[in-house]
Image (cartoon, rainbow, N blue to C red; front, top):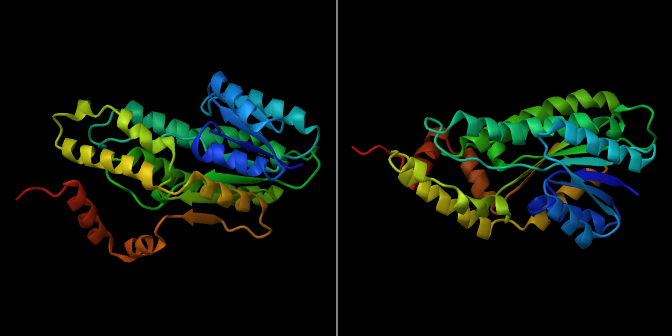
Length: 283
């Protein structure tokens, strides 16, 4: 039985990927931050799912979970690690608290580094383990290539994941461990619906306030009209199991619109986005 570790398994892409793999005979170890979520998932998913209780920024907690997985594998390699856990921080760079920016990078960038270091040996860098070498799937975003205004922390974290993955893939060739990026467009997950809970009143007197109101409304629409998480789960499963996986999978609702946007000059795209959000200075 192949075994996979998935971070951020309580909802969204992590939950859908866990279910997809379990339905196809995998054993899944899924990380959650709350005991209640651990109990819920164990009940929902059954015996082949093992909850791991940790926050990806807590190195000691992640290492303890890796020891638990090592014991369960009983000398065999781990088939995959899906670095999915993440948050989205929004706000204008000129006014956003540095601690908020730091929190974004800590969860979305340092977190995957911590989990990769903890579970990497189980994927095959530890020569004492037997079995096929595993793979790492890094969950990036279309934001890993394109930067939207007022979401710079999230965009920066996904740009970082793209670069981290490229370097890591070339390093881990030494052990035969592959690293694959999955970069979705908008997905129907709670990360977007949480935009409604973000308090933007601190920017009430900011010149960015009207644009922040518009982009929050846009994020809520993304949560309603985005891709189903199951579609992303299917791609992640392919990245884990394909005989010849791509180095990067990008999944978007409208590939034609995405292509047109990538072909337009950057300055043209700047003006289109700025006009939509009201970021063009008044004459």
